[in-house]
Figure (cartoon, one colour):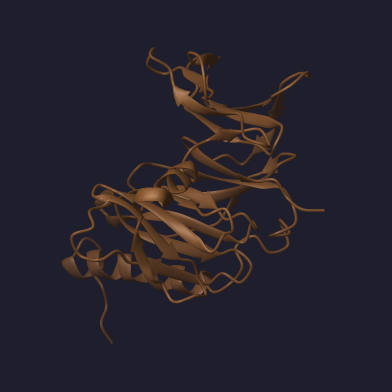
Length: 261
């Protein structure tokens, strides 16, 4: 029987391998089982932890504890929930020591199954992901352009996006406000501030030093300011805060599913 000596080269190989095997075993189970009713409850998913090893977490829309979704030793980033709240697309880092996004994955939150969506060679590195309106495809922005990939369980057919389909693909990556949509969130000229841009006129101010905005249903927008989530109505009403607990380090990059009755 082989024994690893602490500090030896064999130990440095066995530890990541053990983490990988543990992750593989955990990945076959629904990560939010008995915590959030996937596809029905309203909830958010966000990234937490260090840049080199960030994981994905889920939290109910009415607050409470943050639940871990992924446990891998590499970084997960830029999550995007599908319109049905079941599929979760995200970017996964290159290696244990390099968090540069290298692959796009889709996790089924109902059954825990994962699938990698591979772009053809020469398609650049993925930078953001979103979903088509009908949830049938994942939209991938890369350093070389936009791509549409059929979502699981369909075969992962990859198509470059151009021409008439480009506007819809770009919208899937934007923070759109209202139903029907009347504006989108954009960076202000002042670094760190967020503005709202409509079809006409100059952008209007939204928030100061907000790291991110996310569409919070048809009538609200949520802002991530430090470790605080502030939910603001688009019409009359008072802002409210998401009271969450068990927070990981540096929560960021939030995506939201508004739930179904």
